[in-house]
Length: 127
Image (cartoon, rainbow, N blue to C red; front, side):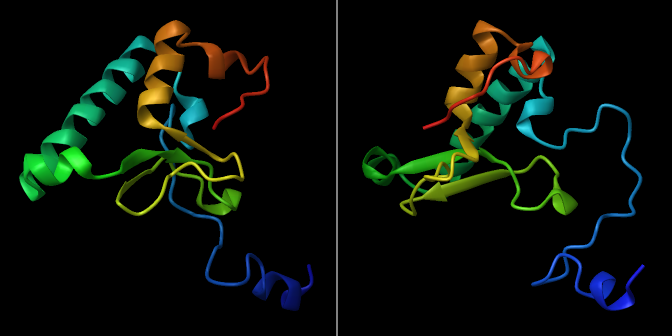
């Protein structure tokens, strides 16, 4: 292997592949969600988000705030770990690049068919 190419892998930044062992059923992205338990987990997460926001802001502020919470695919596979973004008055988690989905939309998709991502039969479009 070319040591110079390896030194620049993932540049810019330190985006090397993780050497941390991952357990079975590790959730790399939201497309790894495939069960009723995952739907319940997402619903509990959504409720927790709202509790958290109410602990920071009053109802008057939240009534007029733009809140966006959801998941997106990472830019690079080296750090593909399921993580959520929460934005308050700071744009949307879902951008024009089509990599993101709002948590409420994800819950609705999975309530209709919790196996949709597991089957991976259709191209998913997010807005």
